[in-house]
Length: 360
Figure 1 (cartoon, rainbow, N blue to C red):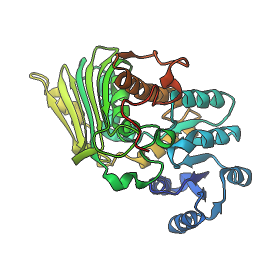
Figure 2: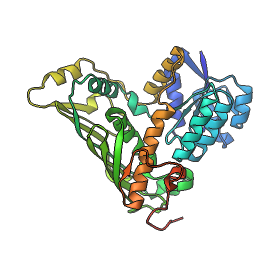
Figure 3: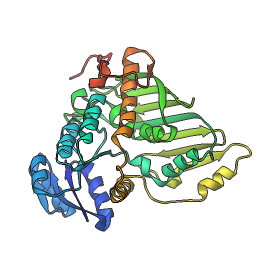
């Protein structure tokens, strides 16, 4: 049995604890850490965790661990992951995994010197339907990819941003582009492959935050696919939608925070009803979520492979975010590979600064 610990016992930590419990005898949650000792103790009591440690350094000194789950506010993700890598311990880090491309590259460099590996929680990649879609794409069943759209239309009221670290560049790294829509467009990127260029806008429409509360982008992919991406926390009818138009079928999913096969539809182009039959060959009621990714993570450890989602995969998604902000804030088209260490958007997603005055 492998041994795990969770650092940060806020809301998302329960999803990690549930996923670890669902893995059964493959892995055991042996300790938790939180700056709020009472909250850590309450979490440990709820989930039957035997030990609470006061800080990560103590945890790494006193426990023999296979993986540390990092569930803290975003600004702490990279420093904590670096501590784990220095101790040769694997890391499973919540989104966003870092605040910038610079931090991702720092993690990549540290990982090269460690026997530990860093995996990012992008759980929607691991639902059975998404896995099936990627396979059908790779097998050519759906034909050429032509058009896509990716909408994360969520609602977060003013009270949501009363938490001090939310809505700030320093602590959260960005707005809905960084912290909300990231799950949907990461899934889109995993299906469509390399993106080529981005034209974007971002605005602060209604919330008293430093960051945007809505962004939109037009994206061209290396294979010629054109896509639209919307990220919002201003939308009272909440939904998460992805649509892929291929030569032979339209594949769509509409859900909110997790999907099953029932949330997906496949509409064949005339003369291609066989595509629907192929889609329906495998059906699952499993909800996309941390449980699916935890199983894939453990499978990789068991086989000696690098656990998904790798830092290389993560960097592609983080570069997409940096390019979106750069395009929105400079009013220019930004191409893949354009944002290097000499770009102001490499060290921070804020780059040259948002075109609106900071509220805080």
